[in-house]
Image (cartoon, rainbow, N blue to C red):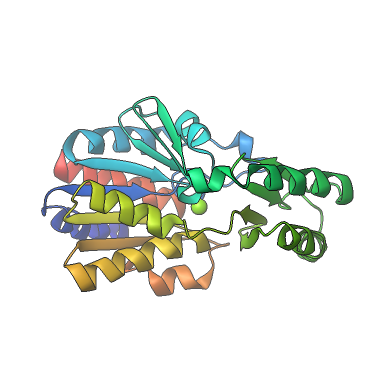
Amino acid sequence: MTQSNDVAERAATVLLHRPAGLLTDIDGTISRVTAPPEAATVEPAARAALARLATVLDVVAVVSGRSAADARRLVAVPELVYIGNHGLERWHGGQVTASPEAMRFRDRMARVAAQMRATVTLAGVRVEDKDLTLSIHYRETTDPASAEELVRAALVPVATAEGLVVRPGRMVFEVRPPITVNKGTAARDLIQERGLRSVVFVGDDVTDLDAMSEIQRLAIEQGLHALTVGVVGPETPSEIAQQADVTVDGVDGVIAFLTALADRLA
Ligand SMILES: [Mg+2]
């Protein structure tokens, strides 16, 4: 894929500025979106490319809406940093650390999960309890458009009453604690902690826009060398291609990009 090769060439140039990091989303980026989400697998070629990149870059991190432990299980490259629950927790070297602020909302989160399980009985709607956050999936319903409205109507009043925040994603609603932690703050924290001078970020969904815009802000304000890569497929929100510096075509495009990048750097 020429497009992926061109993007790899640009990324390799950006990453010459050390220390250098690569941050990637999982679902829809290095893993095809599946129903149910537990059935998702990371493409072996993506795993191999990330493992090679981890040997040459200063940090390779996964930033996902999944729990950090689930992200670690799915990607299964021990050298990576796993940032889970959109930045609320992190797995590194066998240790999970969670945001103490987010921990305070676990009981409320559990109550919303229980209430959603009790009230939304539409076939195909699934409540995934990720401890610090919740995901309400409607991908497996027969009519996702009407399921979206039904779930929204049931969820928003309940979550709001508990002081929690609801954010829509691809065939999913995410419920989060009302604290400003997202993929953008997670990316910024990692960049600052590691003193990174360059970053490449890859993502496909609206929650990835936080990371893209934060990285672009750091590029303008602090001279971070950066490239944001949007993954464009049939379900991609249009904002991704608008926000990202460059795009690749679907999971296959990401794999071709990561492989070409590893070939250039390793
Ligand atoms: Mg994704």
